[in-house]
Amino acid sequence: MDARRTTRAIIRAVTALASAAALVATGFAWSLQHQVDTGVVSSTAAIPTPRPTRPGEPFTALLVGLDARTDAHGNPLPPAMLDALHAGPDEGQLHTDTIILLHVPDDPGARAVAISIPRDSFVPIAGGRGTHKINSAYRRGMQDAQEALRAQGIEGPELDRRGREAGRRTLVATVEQLTGVSIDHFAEIGMAGFVELTEALGGVPVCLNNPVRDSYSGLDLPAGHHLVSGPGALAFVRQRHGLEDGDLDRITRQQAFAAGLAQRVLAPSTITDPARLQRLVDIATRYVVLDSGWDLDQVLSQMRLLSTQQLAFHTIPTGRPDLRTPVDGIAVEIDRDAVRAFVLGLIGPGAPAAAPAPTARPSAPSA
Image (tube, rainbow, N blue to C red; front, top):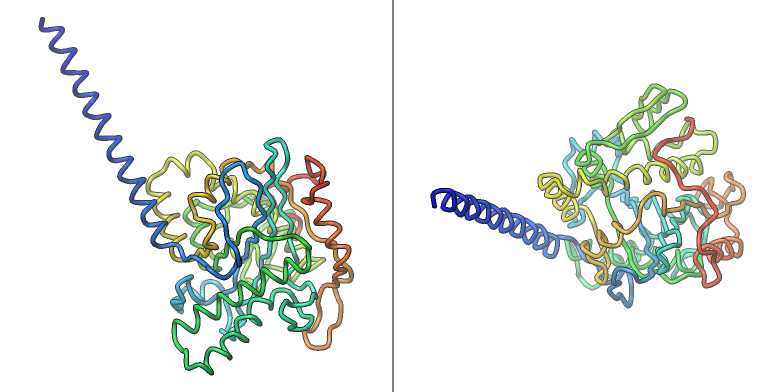
């Protein structure tokens, strides 16, 4: 009898502990989901007709890294953070330093494709705004909208919010015009969010064949393997001075870094760590903007289906990297027909089931 009572007591204790653990886990998950649902900035203008994409459905997304001196809510970054980031003076640039077209197919056996567009690509800007570097599309759309809004008496945070929405819409339309593909989703992260993301993940592994010391980006690393995070990670992906092919070499470096970053985000040590998940959600709610048809839960569900072995990195075809332009200085020459043929060959209806290009590894080229 005593043995049976002892056994029942143990079972009740284990059951109680399991129930308590389940409640804590459920409560934590609900808390995170609530923060995401109420905190992540949603863009209603980036994609004109947004629609949810269920896991398993194909989609094409535009991923943007923005050179912003504010968070996603328009709040200015602290001066100390801007100094650490080597951000330089705020001249209202709002340049998009990273522009990646991500296509995830519906065939589970097919590779997802990430296509980089050099920031200095000299292309027509949507809305009849002339031909300029593509990284200025966001700013040009924003400034045009703000000029009209000011004439209506709109100022302050509402002016900034509506202006940025116009900037996103202009950038999406410009990329669609360049590549010939429709974009289903949009995601934007500011440079401060990128810095905090790499810190939250404990750094990202990189490898340099040669030492690097660049006063422009602030990067100072010896040759060899490194774990970079925070301002050092931002400097690593922003450096172009001292690289043989400038912006094109920087894209190769960004692609390699993105592969390493994806591995860190999707690692079991990340998705099973409550403290780390909480910090990632905090970062997302402060620095990430998603179109209104794409919530963070969908993003994570879809990204978990990918691994770096299933993601092939490419860069659009380019011409001269030293094209002299009338008003934008030196830019990268672009043939729109060649770009469209290249992109549609990768993600169009007749694209091969698996992209032929090798996957970028979490290491960096010589610098």
